[in-house]
Length: 498
Image (cartoon, rainbow, N blue to C red; front, side, top):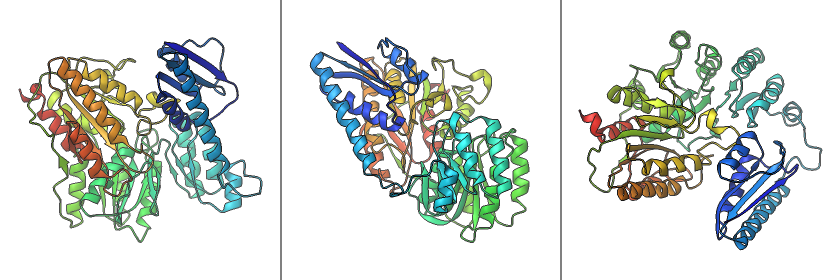
């Protein structure tokens, strides 16, 4: 093998663009490994973990290039692919329309003054997001703060400033919002209608909007408020503002509040506030003893006089039987992971996780355990310096392969979230990983059932049915309802039958 490691000083591209470049280089003939990334601490650690040697000091404004090929010709092919991919990025940038001949605004506030914009979408590294978000709020703009790794004290300060300015801060870590029919961040092409969503949860909101779509019910707006908004620290600051906005919206007839497990006292206060608004508000707020998201949507549908459909599913092509071993849930969506743990814990008992339901169940830094576990690959701790797994699934794909070879793994439970902003062909890559894991298990003399929770609608760019059939052909059972997927996975565990 031949390694090439280069440092390109002062060359900057965003992480999503460099992920695409890395893939292009990795696909070159004879290249076995490639990393093109900014030299953050996380990426230099990743470089070392891949076995490359970095021979000089670097900083986060430098770009790393690492290529491993079977010989010099392969490395040259990788370098050619790199040059072509970077040239493509430059050409795309040169074609951008921008603001014409006028000097471009250098801040969000100055951009608002030029354009009259009243909404800003901010997606910069979390440590830099506060200044831009506060600038936008003070300029009279509501903010969709996509960035994660923003401090909770900064979040409270932003939301207090937003209330004073009569604008709304959606986030931080707001992955999903739909305002006036425009999807911001990750969102599905769900049908329009009269149900408004307030979401302290990204993938939870997507699960709810897709279940509503399957029931023939449409959505007016989805206002994300950030996963910590219903915590005891943030006290539902944005949830109250979003509820008030939807209550005043003539296109919204009822509201569903979606959340990861909230602080009980905050939820009680917000429910009392919602009761004063004069519109029906339904609650899809996860927690021990509370309904799962599917049950909450069914209750909301019944409450508004709608029927409950049979939720779509696509069974595995071969007969499935209970197997020994542990449940391994590998998720991209934090709320979907939370829901899976809440459902599974009722049957299996404690579930280990990097986002545990209680602190003593936390996984160590290696994320390993022989017991039942659920990992959220979209958690802040796993996305520093890299794209969200709904865009770059490489970490999860590596873990799926490892679980296939692990004799303690009984059933694999996975999610896949479609829609705007997500990977363009997520089912294809996941199906390949599923097939590989099932083959590795079979080579080891065991069966490996795989269950997939597929969140999407037919109108999504990737297509719900097409993705489901791709995963089904790879041997997986596929469900639109995450709760139903989890219960099916439990039905395939011998330990859960005792």
